[in-house]
Image (cartoon, rainbow, N blue to C red; front, side):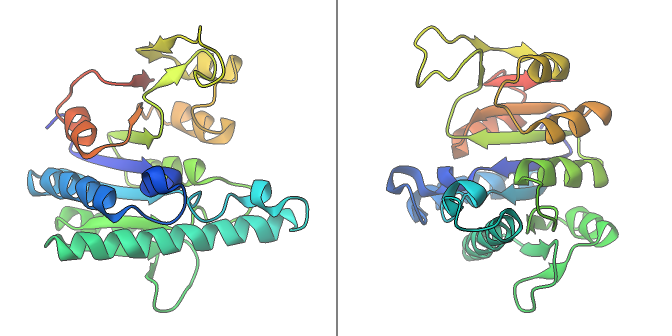
Length: 233
C-alpha cells in the first residue's frame, strides 16, 4: 500500500451514521473490517476518534458548562468511542489496544510514544483516546500531534463530507471541491478542514492530510494511493 504508517482520524458523528448519536454498529464494523485488512497488509494504523456522537464540547454546553469542563467531557466521549471500536476490532480478530492521554484506570494504558511505536511495529491497531489530554485543543489537534510523534506518513481525515470545499456545500450550492490545496491556503481562507492549530502543526511537520468521506471502501482506496477526496500538503 502507499503508506507504511498512518493516523486515521474519524469523526464521532460519522460513527453514528444515520442514527446521529451513539453507534451504528453495522457501519462501525464495516470500517473496522477495512482497517483490519490494511493492518493485515502491513500498514501500521493509529486511530483518533472524535466525540461528537455523544458530546461536542462548548457547543453542547450551551453556555451552562464552563469551557474546561466541556472539553474534558469531550475527552471522555472519545474514550467511550475508542473502547467501543477497540472491542469491534477484537471481535473481528484484530489486535488492538487503547492508549489514553490522561490516566483512566481500566480504560487503557497511559499514552507513551515509545510504547505506541512498539505496539504499531508489532502489528497492533492503536486507538489514541482522550485527545491531547488538555482543554482548548480539539481531537484534530490530537490526531496531528500523535501523527508527528509517531512519524506517520500521512493523516487520513475521514469525515461526513467527501473533501475540502471552497464553502460549506450544504449551504452553498456553488461550493467547489478541491483535489489538492496547500496548508497556507487552508489557513488564509479559513476553510473548515481542521482547526487552525492542527493545520499549523501539520504544516510545520510536513505531514500530508487526506480528507475524504468515511467508509471502509474509501479507507482502502486512500491507502492504495487512489486520488479521492482532497489532499492538503
